[in-house]
Amino acid sequence: MHMGGLIMAPTLEDIAKKAGCSSATVSRVLNNTGQVSDDMRQNIMKVVEDINYRPRKSEAMGLRVGRQGSRLVRIVVCFNCTMERMSLDKGRLRIEKDDDYSSADIVAESNRLSNSFYRTVVDGMIDELECWGYRAVLMPCRNLLAPEFIDEIRQDDCAGILLTGAYTNAPDIAEFISACNSPLMVVDLDSEKTGGNPVVTIDNFAGVGMAFDHLYSLGHRNIGFLLGVEDNFAYNERETAYRYNMAAKGLEVREEWIYRGHNMVETSAEWLGKRLGDPGRPSAFLSSSDVLALGAVRAADAVGVSIPDELSVVGFDDIEPAAAVTPPLTTVHAPTREMGALAVQQLMIAAQATSGKTLSYKLRVMPELVVRSSTAVASG
Image (cartoon, rainbow, N blue to C red; front, side, top):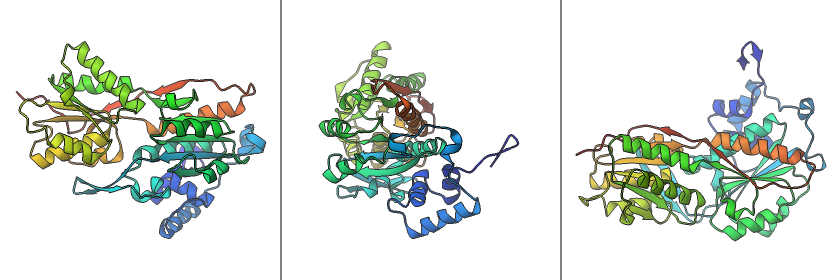
């Protein structure tokens, strides 16, 4: 790569772009960890050879190494919810529920539409770790407290741990963190469940404010909210922000316009399908996640309600399917790659600390509104 006359060494991200995969997949191939198809492995190794990739030498960077000289960081992606395997057919989203998926399925390339939020978080982590001269080992799991998993986490070959995912068992998260004997950073998991451990997350209040202001500027006054599960700290913050913005404009919040339930496309579509025929329904829905907003798109299509002419929908997160469905979803973009990179930077600071004391703090990154085709001026 050339930049301003300088020759830049190729990175994992460069390999991923040329090979048509994620940085996490490249890392698994180069580190010989995880499951990757033979064809993809051969494709990646061909790109590595073609661009003459060489891992960066940490010694040249003058960085202090982690525990016992280790240059290895474990990335734990925990997920214990029902998985909705997503695929697209001419702009229409197809869903296949799966409760029997393996740990490897959580980060599998074949599930890129289903796992795009955490996949890009992990990509940001891996690319940033490479810049610091550290090697990443990806560890997806469905059970944080499995004895063999805890044993591996506690091995002395680890300089630090990065924890992210969608995990609903709060005591498990707290116990897992207590069991870790390496510096640890958490990305987008509930700080109340992490025992005061440092957390990198999204500014949910700012994001919902952007989405609400957009709908309000289009003339929408009857605005519903798709909450999802009620024990998710991010969704609770987004609901609080929704209620605050409605109250600030003197608008009524009607509880029957708020969806509470599983964070799944199919369940939100089912709930909305029963309400979109009501003449007194909202003219717009603001959603705590793209997954629920995609359910609104699915429900509207099923009952013949036109988006955005008859119903406006705004999502949150900007996962990969959001831009690919018909109509493309207006949403709040979460800078997931940057969140992953920021978590690594904070982990490096913690790994260099000499006091042995872990401070409790939460870093919020600023999202941005992405306006596509699912919102329009309120009719009537």
